[in-house]
Length: 216
Image (tube, rainbow, N blue to C red; front, side, top):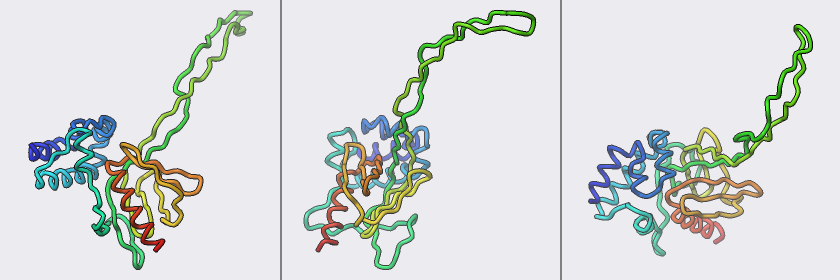
């Protein structure tokens, strides 16, 4: 079944079918309308499914996802990966590079309630008076704007590359990190940067190792 999962991801992952099978409906819908995060997320998931299939494991369902998500062992060194989208400075090493989605919540007008158009009363030819009109009340609600991109973590910086929500911050400026079931939020000073990701726990492990190494 592991190779069946990989085949489904390879041929139907562009439309988010594998995300629906992982019971991640939100990501599945996002993959469907962005063609697998513009192909970046789909290629990354194909590689991930292939590696998991080689191990004879599966990535199906929330419970199994928690088991197969990448984890750093206590004696395991920080991973060193290639980052083709970020220009590295002298002495900078990339430890994480994977698709993520920037989430921005806006409070906007989503509709109107009440109000009436009123009635026009003709006074004379070419002149009328409008009565009974009332202004409708706007209804506001929170709407999420999602922008796919790439999250990169080095021994010096946290970078999100995307058309919106992009940021490039030093790790030493990081105030806090909050992991969620389907993402992670970075806070620098008073500003937060929420991202959707499949690996919030793994990201926290990498950051903890980097920060501890800097403190030492």
